[in-house]
Amino acid sequence: MLIYNPKDWFTFILKVHKSDTLRKLGPMILVIAIYSVAIAYWEQEYLDITDHPWIKNIPIMHSLLGFAISILLVFRTNTAYDRWWEGRKLWGQLVNVSRNLAIKIASDSNLDEETKEFYRKMIPLYAATLRTYLISKGLQFVLDEKEHPEFANFVNSDHEPNHVALLMHDKLFKMRKNNKIDDWHFQSLLKDLGQFTDVCGGCERIKNTPIPYSYSAFIKKFIFIYIMTLPFGYVFLLGYYVAPIVAMVFYVLASMELIAEEIEDPFGDDSNDLPITKISQNIEKHINQIFQTKNDKWTI
Image (cartoon, rainbow, N blue to C red; front, side, top):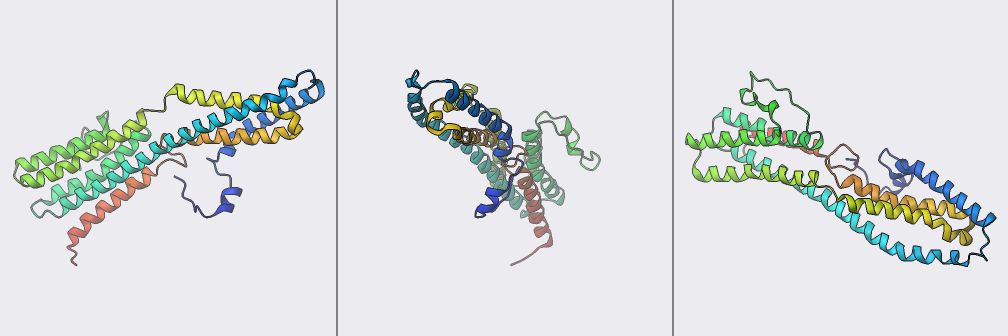
């Protein structure tokens, strides 16, 4: 995710970064401008407006369609942003539940060091595996099976986050069976562990349910038809100035669609995607701090 200062206007105006829509749409903008110049030349040099007075009425159509296309784009961008924000809330929930679970485990004096060490490694591992599952769904982790025998079958799992959650649940049930924790503590930890799967399911819902194809295709076709017909009605009002104006209109409309396409899938490595790599690293950092603080027996 690109980190920036929202108050630095000049940087926004002058800087063109790799995810800037102007950079992506540059070739198409040039094509649209050339196309508009060609239409302007044809209408002004070869088309007699007195023989085709209806051409002057074409802008009325664009005025009517402009309202419709603006409503569609607003709905499109709002829907995409809702998906982006829901993804951020889910990862915020993962941060909170990871900390809560770590604090409960680390502060329980009845638990042995082997159990605490297990959860110290597994809690951040869940965030790391969820991150790779959402981005690539194919990245494997290299683990020392001699040092961590509980991970022996981990790399063979088709769904790594669920496998990590299964190991943590299995450990919890064994703790309850051996009476290392009471029933109240067991239920509390079980509730926290259940939220890990809830977060994963929510992320999968966003990842695996794109905007309906027909809706997305219709907006693109609508923008294309709108832009391709725009020069016809405005040549006799603007002359050759119609080229930069139509190019600007295309840039604005197409940019809104590109932005929506990028943020509707917030799990990736694009500049506008959620910083889930940084979040997962922070989870590991915070979990280690929680267990280290408890081991050092800091007091207030």
